[in-house]
Image (cartoon, rainbow, N blue to C red; front, side, top):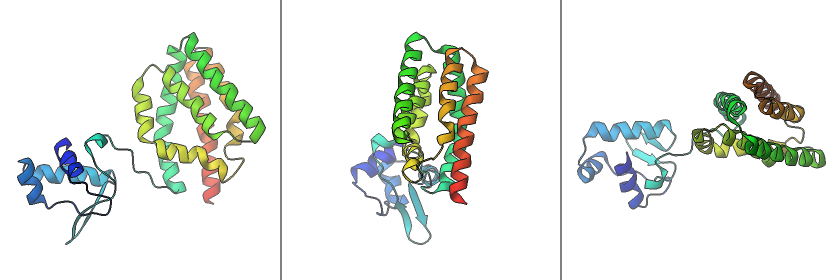
Length: 215
């Protein structure tokens, strides 16, 4: 997969361009047809390429050696946000529980500082999308597992889109505002079960508001 990414990257193909034929890739990389097709199927699942019968395989997103771990392709509509939220729920709940178990004094100070900023902006503007995201990122950091932030980075575009919903509806997820402090208190109290519960409460409100906007 890396070799094919490098070859396509050096070819300077742009989104909309047709990929080289299988035979050319096989010859250049000294691999079999099944290997080429396996990589193409993987990229299709990621929404990176599209195969058109009788025409070839077309690039939908830029491929280079640096994009081996490509950002997830998430539908930009509300349904895509709900799908992303389902995945994020598992990450957020576990990260909060681990933060409750593992966080030290410096972690708690950082989380609370982000919370205070979020609360201040929310009181002033009625919403605090970027500050809300920063609060949750600080919990990811406190989990002690860097893979959580790596996974979130794969969803960064859709996560930012979710936190930007307040530009569409000012009161989006506003009901979850007080629960964020309760989540921090659960983490500070070293109570992983309460941290899980408060995280689920926040995400349930977000889900309800997304579904309400769809209706």
